[in-house]
Image (cartoon, helix red, strand yellow):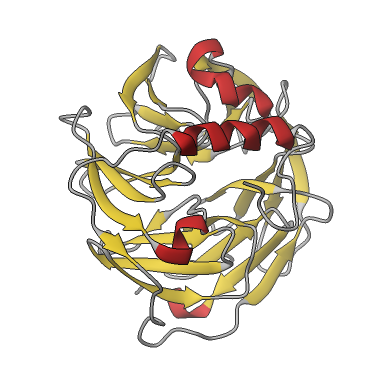
Length: 317
């Protein structure tokens, strides 16, 4: 499978060949809920608003700090950018040491976790474990290694106890990183798990499934061997390529359908609606924070086209 308009990596052929191999062996998880083409969500359907641009970049990870500043990663250059507010220029603040900048997440000590190694190597990530995470200090600009030996860090989520979870959308292993940097690379397995976000009570880790059995799952942290299938796509939507997701204030998954160019909200198992359309190559969505800049309640989308959009229909508050 090839994501429209962009090969995702300069070595993307190998990466997407691996996706084909995964698809060939796709299996369902627990009691799948099937779904087809979705209606527009109530109050949604407005045109997305362009609020930022990183020319020539393929944006993969995103995080917003308490002051409403948005950070995002570029897969191609390995750089991390900061935008202080909608419409502000993207300022490079760091570069990962080993290429393939991936997910972002805030650590319990206030540093920004930066996943890297997200290139063609992740196709064999369960075997070679090239994924790594660095810590970025926004105050000093210092980037220091934190953890390595992961299948990948396509998605990162940090629990209240400081434990971090990392996914790989081209393999099966979900890793767990303890606050001291110790890694358990095979904490759980879920083919093509992409994105990572924890429920408000830290009971569940939510993930989209991009290539294998496409849809949305959640894993109980207390029982990682029992993933729960919330959405299994069918019909033409089986090729939609769900990517990095967020949760709204009601813990409803909000998911970009990369290849279809839509942003979806999952209102109940097997039931989803469209918040926005016309956004192919969307890689991740996130809600803002704070009272300024990329502020709380507002939904933002990044993509492999280097663009950042606000999704008016996704307002949460």
